[in-house]
Amino acid sequence: MKEFKIKVEGMVCGGCENRVKNAVGAIEGVTNVTADHTTGMVVVTSSDEVVENVIKERIEDIGFDIREE
Image (cartoon, rainbow, N blue to C red; front, side, top):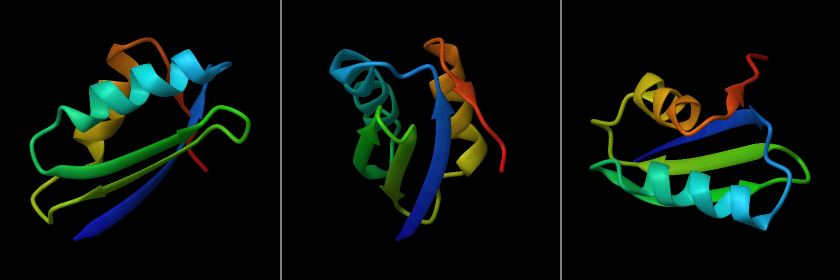
């Protein structure tokens, strides 16, 4: 199992959190997603086969920006 912590810009409410959770949760191999609009943090737990870039692309595809740290 792997865990990714991704900083996301543009989440402003619980609805945004749900959009991110649903989109990322639909990726094959993802086992858990938490999103917090107050901190802008998305934490994803997945099987070892999931690549971080796939998760980031899915988040960007639904209209949010990734903040590289």
